[in-house]
Image (tube, rainbow, N blue to C red; front, top):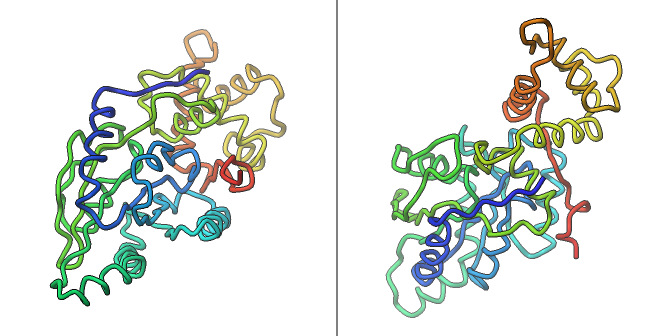
Length: 287
């Protein structure tokens, strides 16, 4: 399965981020807690360079808590402050401002020593599509300012948003990178909804998800679809799920498209419980 997606507005967004970088004190890098490595855009490192950064592991409620703790320890070892948050429910919002103040304390102390009046922290939020940037902004601002949607590519332009007296946010459109050198990354992004379904082979995405569950959470896969054993042959697995969940066509034939939609929806809507699709020791980030 080869996955690529780099719409024109993303190239424009990269230029905009680069241009606006000098206006902000800190970068809030939003990643998906289920795939913290795969949802980190490597272009962001090139763009922001040495600008202070806070990594926010969003959708933490959908991820395996113990694995998320491993990721927070990993980022800490890299000298990067990170927080697990849930922007949809508002969990961890207060911690963001506290962490940003801590990261920028030396800078603001120097400004104060020079006689510069105290001002709000200026932060830029960056992240791939559908990672929850607009939802986070609305939570922090406590009102619906940024457009939200459950499909990638909703935010198309930049805007400044005031969050009380302590924080000003610069929203940016989600940016993917032009080419996924590791197709495993593309598969994880597709499975979690970061790439538009309309450009994907969803059966391939479904098979990837089923094999992941078989390997990492077999008991949950069996329980969800009432399977005594998990068939090795993927067609047999589709057939078993289709029969048990009524994904049939006239004549009793299995409707593979319905099975595909069912499995992907179940994964994305937490029907298997919280899932983490990668761990620090399984990724290239250790290199």
